[in-house]
Image 1 (cartoon, rainbow, N blue to C red):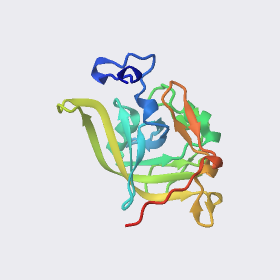
Image 2: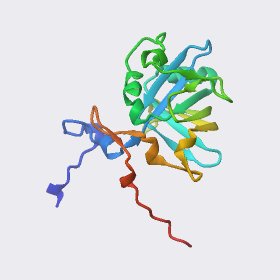
Image 3: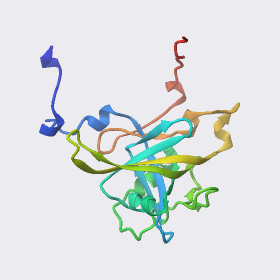
Length: 207
């Protein structure tokens, strides 16, 4: 049986053509984060280490692997906006992760339009059907099991305003598939999308 299982210790390497970790934990939602520095200079960047973590209050988080502009900006302002990356915006999302200088606006690079938010000062992406305005609740530098610090930072934000295109609300219920969110896979260019036929229902057992 052991011959049928590929086992490895990450610290010693995986021994495969591509690290399987990201592919196993996936597909993952994309944290398309808009932010600005203390002087109002805009940034827009996608993060594949992203998810929701709490209901009340709603809290989401993304991880900056390495010190990037988004991290620097949220440290300065305490605010950011999550924008839903959809299939129709996939190319624009991909363009926004180009390795450009910090003085280059990814909004302009990806031909996207900043729209003033209601609560925070950071603008959201007008072309996306869903966005969350967030105030930073915690910034946590990650560490190994032996407590050695890792150059990665988990940014947690409380969602203080939500914007949803009304056509995504079917009888008051948000239609996940209709939004056509794209999800990050594990390969160097792998993405997925959700289709209506992928839906199945399963209710939790009752006490």
